[in-house]
Amino acid sequence: MSEELTSKQAERWSVPAIDGSNDNGYLTAGRLQALQKDAYNEAWNNGHAEGLKAGEQEVLRRAQRYDELLRALTKPFEELDESVEKQLVELSIALLKQLFRREIKIDPGHIIGVVRDAIRALPIVSRNIQVHLHPDDATLVRETLRPAEGDPAWHIVEDPVGSRGGCRVTTDNSQIDATAESRLHAVISHALGEKGDR
Image (cartoon, rainbow, N blue to C red):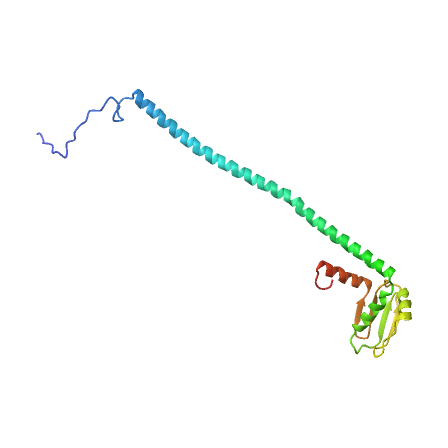
């Protein structure tokens, strides 16, 4: 029994081309050359892209290395700056101390102003005022300075341990530290911009 094929069931068969015109035929020299060129171009493009990527990574690696080297080079300069600054401050303090001591030796009479200012800094109702001075300064103050009229009475206490050029004033309720060391410390603190006392 034969069945008739409908047009949907039947397909037309095409004869393959043998000249390679439909990419299914035999390889010809032209077709082989085109395939080689396509393969070369694809390989070149892939290699170029990989090379660019590798080059970018190498440039980034070297840039990071140079950045690390630059930071390493600046670190000693930062440490040097801090060291120089510290040494300059120490030198300035030593110089200021020497100038202060020299001034006390050249003009011991400035102790009069120090004592006068310390006594004036006391509260008005202060009693039993004692001015503690180095013996050399005590002699000078006794000869030069007397309590002014209306000022509270005070008396001198010689303190051989105290340094020249300053004094300590004590009362029953308060104390004024006008020693050379505390005044020098105040000058240094002011020069360095420090706030408050140590």
